[in-house]
Image (tube, rainbow, N blue to C red; front, side):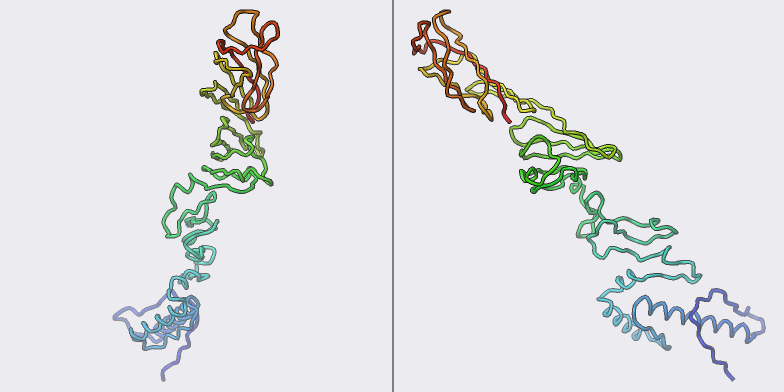
Length: 340
């Protein structure tokens, strides 16, 4: 009478198959069939666990029937079997050696645009990092773009615009930032001495230090820089000098805010004489005016008045105190003050 075998949910790897030509013994065949049933049962249960639906595996199973089952499973898994396999907690091996610690999900990133710390593929050995390909953000830039391709290197070069109040201690990702005036507004901290000047911030970064270099886009001639090392930011340092000239004279600006304007052999005009500075000051400067072409002792400059940030007015006098009105002489001047 045939013996009914009951399948067991376990892997079987050691099969005792009778050697051809030898007498067949029911013992080895029974063991063989039992192990085949066990493997079938184990496979059926693992498929059901992975795909999330029962898999009865009732024989006989035709190709058409199998295709219909696959279609049903794909529909229940949102149209793709990839998501089902991706979320499988454990993919066992017949010898039972593969566990979640060795082979986790194929990837943990839920979308193609990853977040910091996401990775692709699973660990193929013990440990949490072996065999993983990072796809999350590095220094604020995704390693993959929305199409799944490698992100452009330009993403590391241009960090975009900073338009609102910010603590400059937080601008530490390597690259170039466009700085708007809002980045100096109320609530900002640790800004360079450029006050409200728009410009570009370059961040250079190595394993041991971070350097910020700020270059204003305005008339500010300064270049400002500082460095973070050993857990501390240094003070902002300044360098830079600007020279210029126009029809009103010449000027030189220093990064610390000092400015000098001067003119040589400026044609004298009717009284009162007006000097127009070649560059404006933020407050009236100190001014010295001398005549450069007159009979010594006959004409002097006095009563400078009309102080301003863009011009200076003065009168010329004869030795007897009367106002000099001729235009035949020339004068020199120098003004020292601040441009910021």
